[in-house]
Image (cartoon, rainbow, N blue to C red; front, side, top):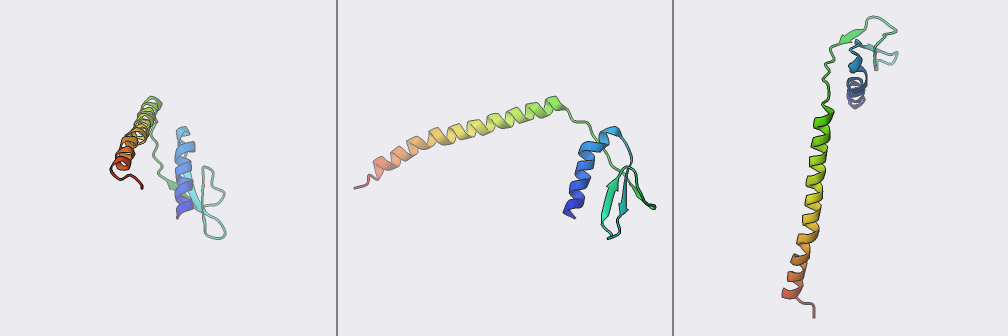
Length: 94
């Protein structure tokens, strides 16, 4: 099942931009084969939908996520120093 999903995702990502037909056939062992030109008939035509990607929106979303991650890491690093210091002051090792 998982390889089938991977193949379907690859077809969506790579081949759908050309708006060509996608067919599924079975090989001799009964495994599904996805292609745009079936070697054997009958072949099942798949209804593959595509959507264009707004690259500007993706870049903005990625930059915002990176900013949030860096802010979180900065806070974790510099907010833990006072916490550790206060713990050492309250509980000095003897």
